Length: 359
Image (cartoon, rainbow, N blue to C red; front, side, top):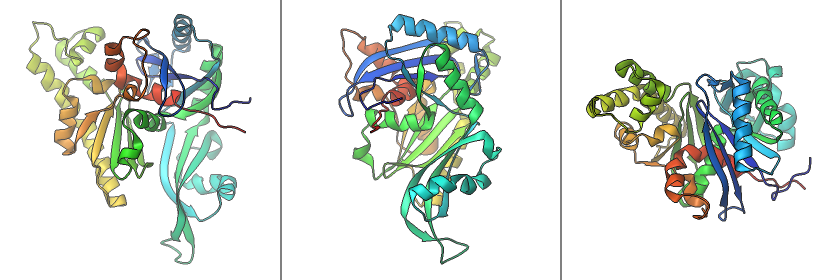
């Protein structure tokens, strides 16, 4: 399969409650939105990042492809959750070629799965080398280790083939977020800052801290917006669709708005505490402080969530909208709708920004 940077890619983000599909054209700093759509999934179709109802997901994807009249056959998708392990580790100083040959042996001690059941990749973060703590004569380097259970990857690949697409890349949500961040904010302008990008999903809260333009710390917190959903359902005894409206500010007259706000605020306690712990760990290990927070994902659509995070973390917080860095044809898209959907589009747009340069 020969693919170039001009090969059109279709990005597919399969979330807990919806599928987001995006396609952009052009090149970095000159991207234009060609397609963007979102379609809900039946409850229980995706649980903790794992497909439970294959037929439902395939049927939804097929409908989206038909409605959007997608003509490209190459797709890029992503995965997240407890099947993904991302760690910053130190290994003996060696070339990238030697590391590629030895990565399994180096990685085995850090992975809680059978090494034969995972796919492994890495990114070298520091090539300067420094003595190890155990042996002052042995130089080491820092790498970002990524391990993903093979059956989760194969599940995503099978879904794409089932709808007639050819999987070109299977990425990770947290790395797609970095691409979207570059589009929505511009990485060069803040390379010296430690910036946390937090994706408030329904099942997971994805955290990626960038420093000097690179991922310095990443974590998938195994809970998200469902905490808020469940607390609201317990308090008001309403069906899911009505609860979703409550979360995003559509409150019927018979319900007191302050009661809704109180439940939403309390539901974020667990997430905020885990994010705070992650910031403290990052600060201890890097001697740096997170200086800015960008929120994205469905949870970022909740009114006032940026203020809630800013108050708890004592850090400036804003909502990330990757659509800001993309040209939008107003004759084809409604600008207000695109802006409103911006936080939901982060992973899909980040995936769509992927390009090839195979020679």
